[in-house]
Length: 601
Picture 1 (spheres, rainbow, N blue to C red):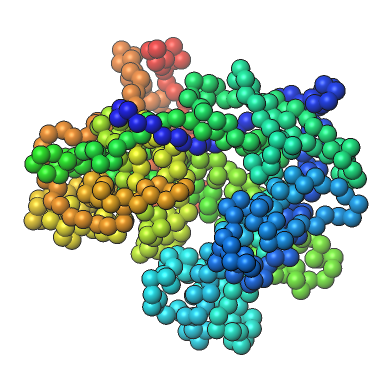
Picture 2 (cartoon, rainbow, N blue to C red):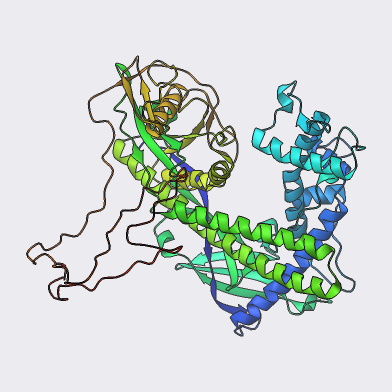
């Protein structure tokens, strides 16, 4: 842990659920089921008004105003979304004879303006790409200025949308399209961000590890007056791991409903130690690996120059990567089935269409469940990875962790399936989890350029050879090499140490180094990186006699499974003794007794 004497504020999020709800005026208890119902009524009003407002504003003039950032009088638009909507006259509409407080309208407009501001960047990119798109060839011309540059991955998706639009309009579309021409208004999720409101709608108090949220909720699905909105005190327990954290401020939560009921997505600000990048002498480079989530290596700045032992740390995902690949394949299969049934239902008779729509609903439900499961596994994988890399950096005394800039990183050249699988890995979540975990011990995560990190030698900056295949790298001139991901980690750590004086900081983003400088990294025989911890296995009692196979029983030969990797394209061979189209493994009867086969505790 780096103790520089400096501190910084860090925001983080967590979730909790209420265990008690009472009426704020009378103190009468309210059942949690009734609480979920009343919250659902408010979310229905918010989501309906937000969807209507976004649909009404879905035209190019809206994005022109947001792109310029100024109103009709030339004044700069405010940062808060509800203030921007009030100045521009963007007011949501509600059903007739329904009363909604002005503070709830703040929540609606803040969420709608936030969504439209996010899409303003996409509108600018689509307009720039459509001007360079050729409908005859389906390609885009090279950008002329730096302002026209768009990441290649995003550009390919836009090209598909432009080609589909050109096919629908038979090539008669204008040369410059907008996001409103190629995309429909986005669907918004039902939630209420209470941070956009003031104390008249909600306020929060924390005492004795209990969070008490006082919020105004409707008492009917269609309230007709102020009397049908009443204040409710909701009590929720703060997670135990936050009890001893130096939290300086608690923020209003976001209300959502899931299958278990009301969920509070909370945020807080705490004080963490801050590292001095200029004083950093040891850095850890994290390279995103195709076979696992990532690998790390150490580079140190010594009086003799940059040194490294080229011994890295490879993250063990405990089989979660293979499970994610299986769930991804299953989700894609369900998507293809639903798309095919949708095509068939469009031209089917009414009675057949009803049957197909029922099947499509079932497939959509399964696909949603697969997506939820993938999200949970991705989160578990990201935070486990963040903790492992943070411990590795803390043990080495590093104060900087360099990760590849994800905006310039693209997986290509390994086939359609493997490229898609690597592109959908939890890298963004892993960076966020690593940033959060490392900040707790005073380690800063910076983004460095990714190009050439796995192909160039850290010593001479020349192309590396691949004598052992894709996963090996070797420099004939410098006589250094090893695992391809470990060599890349050395390069990334070197770029962080050389560019620590040219760090670019932006609000809401990690510090970023945009320049690539070179200095030779000498191989040091001294141990620079810590030895990763390995799980200890139980000792087995060897005093028991060896098992004697029974007479007349054919023992099935055990064949070890191949090493799991997303790049494996050869199917494993069928084990010996197995015939037919399915593997049927027989379980031979053990010859030893239960007592004789017990392991020592």
